[in-house]
Image (cartoon, rainbow, N blue to C red; front, side):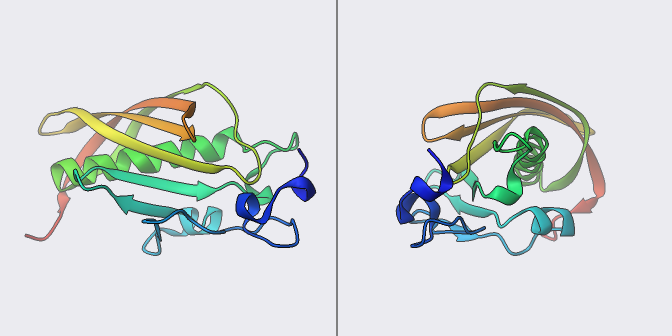
Length: 159
């Protein structure tokens, strides 16, 4: 299906064109307190579920695609890295820096897709955290990632 064939609900644009930040589903709000890299590649959205878990998301746009017209694997990997960093921050109250990231690409995302992801800290010591992330379009997984993050003790949340 070409971009021109998509409905306004899929693309967020009544004329069939794709916009960068269209129509997030209910409960999502735009993530505005991000660094320059993430802001440049967004917009990104987030929500906190009733159980305290989080979801980050973005609407895939042409700016996110590679030369084959699918969302670039580098963008999806950077998105997963951000998910894992968020999970570390929420679980430990400490900034974590990526020291290892492994990504398994399972499927693709296309222009107009709503891409969601979340991550969980599976183990944390005083100096490192181990994290898993999943990224999907609807119920179809597109990426699974694992990471190890160095905990930067001097960058703790103010209590």
